Image (cartoon, rainbow, N blue to C red):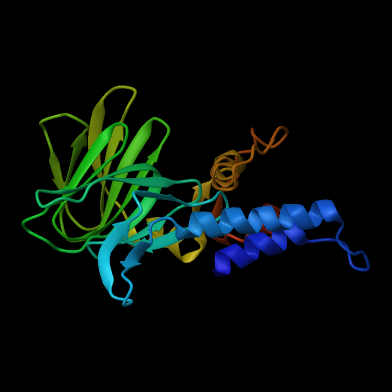
Length: 251
């Protein structure tokens, strides 16, 4: 609801002293409808009989996070999911044998433990198998990765037989271009802080940072003139609802 209200405010913003015209009001209404629809996805609804009793669970099969926003949801098995901006999660199977989902983008998951029904997350190039744990999966471009916060997961290429088990504060990285994988020691907390509304900037050039911000907000940022500057930046950047506010803070 909070994310929807922010989208509504952005769409309806007009200069002080002017009343919004019909076009602005229509845009405001349309954005509100889209926001409501996007936030509804991933929620479990209950079909009610004539007496008001729940007779069947109806689980939406997929949900998305609008660009510039994060979406949180709880799946029917109790697994908590936080989707990063512009990401999509599809539920492929929730039967008795396994729980399988497909991710396009980035997500942080706290998987409900169930030894009899392993949780399997797949991207276009990678597969992650867990029983119950907290981890982050990033599937942008040609490098797909898994950061483990707690528990244990096995990761490998999609369809491959070789799987690598990683431990907390380790990152499994799969390079799509050459088909190779590696494991690195990382600070899991700093790499998953995006779910709390922050971007952790660590020795990034301006070009690297603008690439991330452009992907988050669904825009292309022209950084000609500073792309060859060698200085780097470090710190935490608050991800606001409007990119101009973020750029003001960065300045």
